[in-house]
Image (cartoon, rainbow over all chains, first blue to last red; front, top):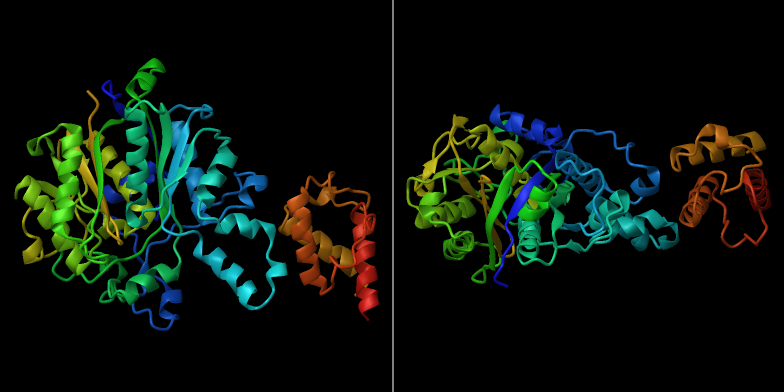
Length: 406
Length: 83
């Protein structure tokens, strides 16, 4: 494989805690609007000590025909909507039969599984409807998007926890780069359930100190940060080979220049800076770029005490103390499988606007995190290349390098 | 439960859960007329078993009902047999 193909982004779509649409997402981020809210169900659930989350507002999905919609839970509904926006943005009326689909979530729909298993334990399995079978499949969003959009190409559902969307984008990029496919829709989707917050509560990694002030609850790199605020949504990219984009005279938004993924094996729960550093460096090597070519790193930074320190130190070790760093999780929480693609799209759009959002709630930088140049408010910054990280629970790391198309 | 109440509950479920337009819910309507497929029929049976607390699956025989009117009658028969 010598003649690699360049890979460009020509479409983007998102459903975020601000609602539907990429423009809505980016506008709210740049205006420093926090999406975290108090969730009564969390307070009412024993042994969960975090009462905050970000949830997608009510959206009318009846535009999706019932014959497809009946098998969908929220994560598939979000995915169909985000894919449709990405296709429209890419000026694709209908995906060609060779368009690949790469999508992932951390788990299948928890609410559907709970209903399903309740019937099992109540010995009422005969009362489970056929729709539920398709809703609890791990790859339900992949199957549902493919059916709804009549996508006949290769389909992959890669579930790598919170690195899922970035891994799916990275895989699609590698396949196009190597010439196996020419175009793909790729990203991640997630639907919130209180059990997500419960999981982080069990791990002592959920935000607990700002239950009375939800807007302050997610605060990456801040000295008072205390844990993750869970979120939901979907973000999808339409990517293709440069030849394909030029041939159809597509509007090129950006170029995917490099990608890397590796696995942390020292500890399943605690990421190490060595492993992250290696991942970032491999992505730069793949992009054939120097550290000085990178203008911004959009960190995974979930607002946990240990994770933020390890990541920012890894970034500092690779790029030095002057590298500009931000995290968008202060605004929109941690949308888990969707966070990589959602944040990638956000920063890509900000790059095109020459304006970048700062890390919300970074009021006082933790001394141990003060090893890079933190962006703390919306600033006009010219970015040519940026790195986006996703470092997942369980040890999956992913870094991607995005640049302006020249 | 009288026949009118049965018709009302069946139609309400068909409109809400299966999104069948009200104008299609006439006694002569077949499942094909209502544009429901085989998976929908399985789910409808569960819905009506739950709604009316009856056992459709073990009482159904081929030809038990062929249209919506027949379904109303079949449900009414099962409710009466239960009494």
